[in-house]
Image (cartoon, rainbow, N blue to C red; front, side, top):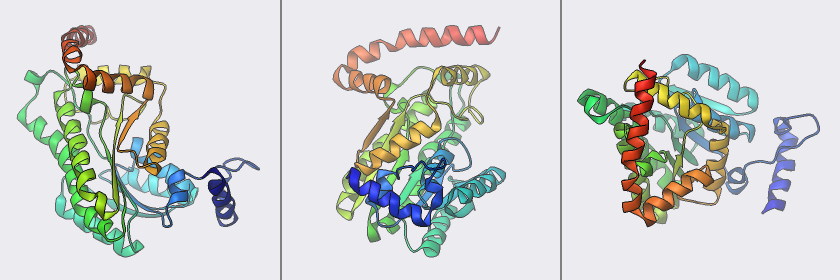
Length: 307
């Protein structure tokens, strides 16, 4: 397999000089690029953060990328960057909560490119704060984007994937497992994405579609920008991201490498997130009994940030 990737890199470099990130240094293509015979991807939340990081990795391998985001200016900037990196791009300003618009975007992309190989449902909102301080309207807005936005993406693209196979990647979070206090809206929606992905893994395997769900812990991104909840939740999110030495590029690369191996649960970083994963699965009672202590820590942090 490693030899195949070297040969593939050399063959691509003849037509695609951007594989050389630095003069005289050849960058190996992603394993997923080497494994697939065609390279067409559609990514939501592509204008910034993790979505844009996915686009960069694929663009460097010469993929054709459909970039979708509600941020028109950021979307245009991202598309220009991907073109400079070597990608052919198709951009669409898209609100993932609009099922009809999502279906139209999927149909347009497939018509323009002849098919689809990789779908990444990445768009999402950050959310935090005590459960009793949240409103039903806030719950609806977070569910609409974080959960139903992924449902809309799956509904729009699975019929196309069923024609030729491919990979469906849904972005959740270790919050889908951790159930940390003061994150109820986020926890519930990301747990829903995990459950949906596992369900589709079973339903779609015989159609040649592999499904994965990505569950990273905190990393450096802009999820706090449109966070739903009080200022204390934004402050806590920013503090946790600041402590992380992971970038969006790290998470995206890891997820794409795991996609090539057809791993369903992509948990990252391994050392911390897997501890939560196995603790919760093997000793659920012990894990849940640890949560009141985390609530006390979160409450103390909120009190300090409000002074």
